[in-house]
Length: 103
Image (cartoon, rainbow, N blue to C red; front, side, top):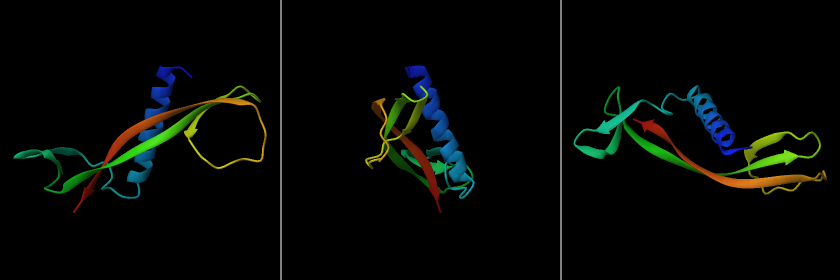
């Protein structure tokens, strides 16, 4: 997987995850703007509701399995598996924030 494909896949999966979460709670990823007099404060556009950022720092792996040669991007896991296979793996870190409104 080259850098362009990694970035595209990662951003797409983050966007789909946020979209899925937003269907359960509309406070997730609201439209935001500055806080008026204090530019360090984020507020929603539809009112004076405050917004905070939830930070994610995720280790992801890019694995190429020898069985079928496919490439998979997944969240890194420390759990072991009983199945033996030969694979090459690269671990990267992805940090991102998702705004959450609260009122």
